[in-house]
Length: 175
Ligand SMILES: *[C@@H]1O[C@H](CO)[C@@H](O)[C@H](O)[C@H]1NC(C)=O
Ligand SMILES: *[C@@H]1O[C@H](CO)[C@@H](O)[C@H](O)[C@H]1NC(C)=O
Ligand SMILES: *[C@@H]1O[C@H](CO)[C@@H](O)[C@H](O)[C@H]1NC(C)=O
Image 1 (cartoon, rainbow, N blue to C red):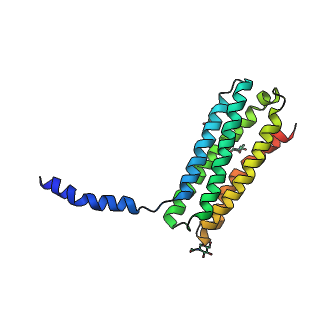
Image 2 (image 1 turned 135 degrees about the vertical axis):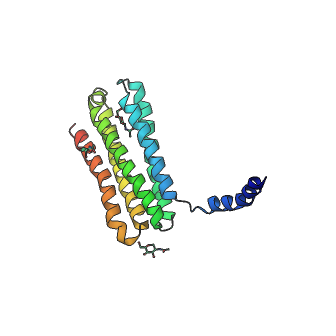
Image 3 (image 1 turned 90 degrees about the horizontal axis):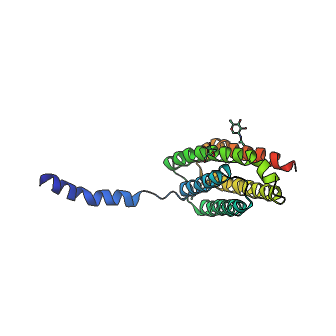
């Protein structure tokens, strides 16, 4: 009974606390981009080489690109990040960099399968280019929202993602 009353007293406080948790649209965007990246990775890594799957790969690659554009839009409109938010964003960026590394490694590994389908290589190359450009814009918008004295560190974290794209492009530019 006593406990019950204590919980009832606490409840409004708990609800208020969760309602006041500041939104972090940049973190949400990175989480979404990571999810789209992993989906694409799964499809390409389990791909048998069937031309039909190429449609799914193209569609998922398009969704990934859209999620990056959406992130850039969200980051442009977002308020400056607090220190807590910056730490959460940094941690998500490290995860994203790993996901991008593994996905581009998968894409490079699948090159022989893409090679067999006449138009596939230029499509992969174009998508990698579009995604790299989009990722650069997104990273620039995010870094702007990071506290000034941490912007250098933030740039360093996003550089790994750009390096992964460079490796992917190098593999597909040899046509
Ligand atoms: C956000 O941070 C930038 C520095 O990166 C600063 O120039 C700007 O005034 C800040 N904006 C707000 C609304 O505090
Ligand atoms: C990408 O696929 C490879 C091969 O299946 C797997 O080892 C790796 O964990 C996957 N990474 C992500 C981020 O999905
Ligand atoms: C992935 O990371 C490993 C270890 O840092 C690196 O050797 C490799 O070149 C990277 N590959 C891509 C595609 O980013």
